[in-house]
Image (cartoon, rainbow over the protein chains, first blue to last red):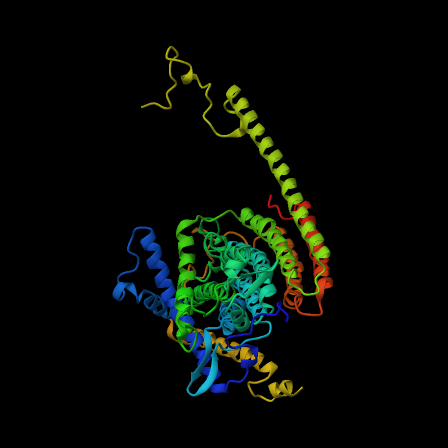
Length: 450
Length: 134
């Protein structure tokens, strides 16, 4: 018996795909489009409403009951509004770029599992448009193509702020995409597959971990088992979608509107916004699929036999999606925007090395369960990883300590200098030796006659 | 070979059937978005004035060419991205098979060596102060 293989899939697996009649596929494709369009509309409404409540105000409350139709009104307005096409822009790329941004965002959703096998008009079919042996890689690929949209938008606008915003955004997105891809590796190590439906199936039951004669039941959702992977993913999903606190591409204090400056208010702007929101939903859905058990019901509900069959799982999936999206809004209401160099340093110097170390650790722990494992080799590897981690930590601890001490000494020296000559340092303070500062006995110099 | 050929045969089945569906989905996506833009073109008014056709800078008329020189760092980061994206792509298949029977410890040790080299790359970039912004 081989304990290393993923548990027997309880839901659809790769073999269940590619068997749908064409009309079923079309129904699913249209459903995904309609679902995403409605999600964007009511997602925008929900974000505005929730963030208003967090900021102690009402938010949209004029169009429709509770302002529910606000986004519909905005969409209609944008569809009918004049489209300004600045004279200097590169017209072809300017028009094509939003399409390059928005279409891959939609496409990434084609491999998201919404539910198990259901009977749709008499045809047994999984609630998922399609599944690939490399489904998660496909999501990453689509995210990378979306970056072209951002860069081309900035480039074709022929405006310095737009170019800078596009460059910033692309550098940020690609940096966080690496950390994102690496945080998936832990999941693949446990699930043994890249197919989304099989990853969900692998989270059906946790299995047990045999160690020293004890059998410890493992939690079934990877968010518990691989919490560092999940935390890194949660951070990268904010960076990947240009959301607060990583929304520097749209840093309006520095760059006007970033890469979308020249897309003033037309349907193209609506497309860009739609692409951004669909990206948010995609990364949320991927987090649900990879870490939160996909469409499977959480614990108290899962005790009910009918929880994970038929159409019910779609409801659990939607609830999870709403909850993850609410966390995006919560973060937006809570955190300020961070500085760009801090953003890049965090991505490259913290997230990626941490991720690599964590992958090594998971792989080593996982290797204990390989049958023909050579314990000596594993312990050597584990020792190397641990010693390496400690070495790096000590090194950085000393470097940081030295840096902190130097900085403190510098500040101290500066204060010392300022005490002697207050105008030193070039900071524009009024010169303190002006005549009228020299006591009451001297005649004050007026600034003018009156 | 049968499923592969069936995939080329126009049916939505077999190995390439899944990819064909993705292609169809792409076609639908492009059609929807392009259609929306086309309808928008028919519905919207167009009354350009010279002021409307200027690019926006900060409220005053834009100065110069509209092109900005920027730091070479962005280029270095995308270059590093290519290296690390390839690294991640190598990690994915390894992660799926290394626990399967027949791979064993050699696979693990090999990946440790590979990750070691990759880590050396990031340490080099770090040391050369490519990752620092100022």
